Every structure is written in structure tokens, then in C-alpha cells.
Image (cartoon, rainbow, N blue to C red; front, side, top):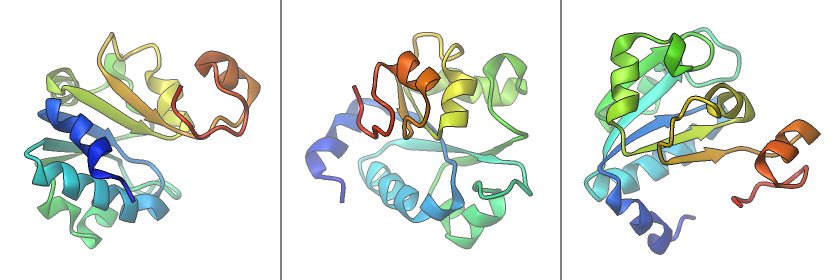
Length: 144
């Protein structure tokens, strides 16, 4: 369970772009999003254009009622790369105070593209290149 102290750290972020990943984690995502919404944050959710194996799609968002909780839901084909995405999606990215991106694939797609924006990348370090890039050992889940 996420403690209130950690959630309160997000209070400074009024608008968030959350790029979700694995459909099996949507329950955790909904808990985090509901806590952020309770504190007044605007949440823009980014999902995969379906069908996309194992990743969250708009159908999953609707099934779990997240479409009623978030301020907007946008789809991306493959991975979100600001320099290669639609202008409306790039605008949402630029307006956000914080980016939360889940998964190694999303980290790799965004690591050179988030242009100094505050970002939290949630992933497990699975290989040496990512370990070197993040400064974390293989197998690590913690933020540095």
C-alpha cells in the first residue's frame, strides 16, 4: 500500500501523464490514480492502441472504470516517443508537470525524449545496458 506521505509528494504536480503498461497491474494503477485524484491532480492516461499483447488498452481502462476516473485517455501505437507522436499527444506531454512511465520499453522509448521534465520511470532493471544507464544493479526495483 502506498503511504500517504509518499502520495503527498505528488501534491506539487497538478497535471500528470501516466503511461501504463502491463494489463495485470491495472488494479495498482487504479489505486494510485484514485489517490492522486482525491488530492486534486489532473490525470491523463496513455495506453496502447489495441490489440497489444499484455499491455493496457482502452478496453481495459473501460472494463475497470478508469475512464470515469481520469481526465483523458489517449492511445499510442507501440511506444510513446514525443518526436514521433501526434501533436495532440505531444501537447498533453508538454503540459504535464510529471510523467510516470511504467516498463522497460517505455523507459527506453522516453529516456532521451523527456527534455528535463520531471519523470518517474517504474521498471525492473533486467539487463546490463539498463543497469548501466540507470546506475542500478540488475534485478533492482528501487529508485536511485
